[in-house]
Amino acid sequence: MNTKFGKILELLKKNQFDNAKKECLKLVNLKLNDPEIFNLLAIICFQLEEYEDAIKNWKKSTEINSKYFFAYNNIGKAFLSLKKYDKALENFNRTINIKSDFFEAYNNKGNALVRLGRLDEAIKSYNNAIEINPNNLLSYIFKGHALLEIRNFDEALKSYQNAYSINPNHSLLLGYILNTKAQICDWENFNENIEKLKLDLSNKKKATFPFTTLTLLDDPNLQLQSSEIWVKEYQRTDRASNKIFTKKDNSKIKLGYFTADFRDHATSHLTAEMFENHDKSKFEIIGFYLGGKIEVEDLWHERLKKSFDKFYYVKEKSDQEILNLVRDLNIDIAVDLMAHCNNGMENRFGIFARGCAPIQINFLGYPGTSGSKSIDYIIADKTTIPIENQKFFTEKIIYLPDTYQPNNESVKKTNKKFLRSDFGLTEGKFIFCCFNQHQKISPKIFNIWMNILKQNQDSLLWLLEDNIFSKKNILIEAEKRKVDKSRIVFSNRLSLEDHLERIKLADLFLDTYPYTAHTTCSDALRSGLPVLTLKGRTFASRVASSLLQSLGLKELITNSIVEYESLANQYCKNFKKIKDIKDKIKKNLNNSKLFNSKLYTKNLERGYIKAYNQYKTSGNKNNIII
Image (cartoon, rainbow, N blue to C red; front, side):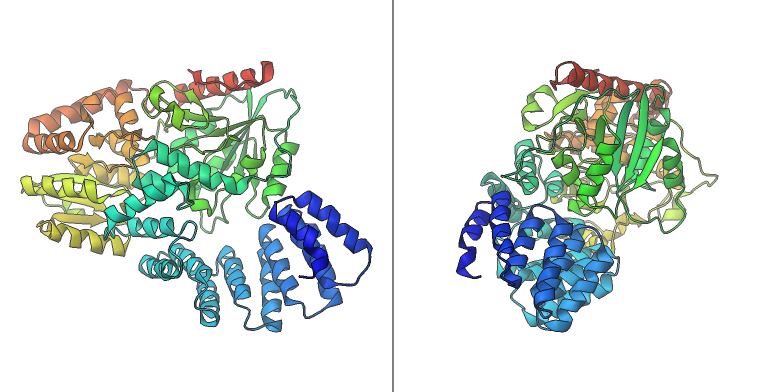
């Protein structure tokens, strides 16, 4: 750029966007008729998230020079930020019409097409970018993301690995690779990759999305570091904090719940009755749905909508638009049911980073710390976050009695009756099972499972058929460990009510580690199936332990791999032992608080009220024990 922009560029390097804008406006007032001036002003507005002003200034650039393709490309990027994907696509196409070899426009076009759900077209656009510039790793990364969306895991992995060959130190790239490999149970170089991940995080490198650390690492400190590194993306150095609130008195405490999972999803299976049981005389309940259009009839979505006093579809809104809406509604407590879930694809952590409510809570969806000082509390219990682990959480903790996890008291029951033969299970065999996603299966726990099968020849392992790639790799890994692959049986997903009936056919649920069963643990216990778990050091590795403890089943919680394997063998070899534990589960279910939704909701509300009163009286936020 021209040297007259020198001072402005220096301010931009220091992230002093407001001062840079003032200097740039001085040049605008000189009326030099230079498209670069408006382009620079637009860039500054974009950095300040003043997207409409950015678009206006880029359009002024194109009025001066109609062939100024950079401006059209940037207008498209601003429309992407505003969630106006059709307009974004229109401007990327305009850019390409002017400059057909501008690879960045193809990348951006692909990103717009992804958001519009046109994934095959997006992949073609990324391929166009790669053809123009095969050394630009972003094209491979974006293509990998799109391939993951259509569950083409092996091609996604190749695309990420192509990017890695260009620059192995690129932010998040190691995490993309490890996450994809975990989803397909590709454990080649697993230990070496894990050690590299640990080293990168220890050195404060932005190596992965936080959620990947939950599935791979049983280390609360590294999970904290990963989250803290990630949330720096949301920080602005020259802008005053947006989180300034006047203490207003609503007639009721206004609760806002935010998630993309108000649909047939595990989160809804756990929370539906909780929303319905909220005391509407004390609370006004408002739902903010971050997800996409419900394409087919979804009874869970319709049920959840009815439980809220107000319900908003906000996917098409920008973070700032959602922020304005939430503040206009005067929400007292904003509850993020996602935090860093979905690797940033659907969650909207930006609105919480800015501060959409005076009290903000991390709850349920992300079993770990947000790493952000903008989140005031996390909902937990004394098993998931023992006192010695509080130092690994940036949030204060609202400790619920029993367990942090909500659950529905009643569930729809199927009329179907299943036989083992319906699922390829042999009568007379001891059936170990695990219906967790394959991403949670680590080579460490798989080794133990194979040892258990080898020591118990009359046993089978029954797994969820998650994806074709992981199924293939699991069978290969079994044979490497000298286990006949016919002893591993896979079954497809079923509706919740059918699954709860089907799982009764198993004898013992073998939990994963370090990310344990969460909703799947509740499902198994509700059906009377024992869950054997290994309690780790992190929130995610202690959830099953929390649920078992709540149901009075401490004997199913182990503290080492050796104990886990030994206890599994004992249950398999002793039919009376497994029958006794199943009888105990059946008895305890009648008296347990685990599925007492009304009591759970009252306890949660007590936590909300205490947090609200702390804020109203002193502005302090301290740990809360219910």
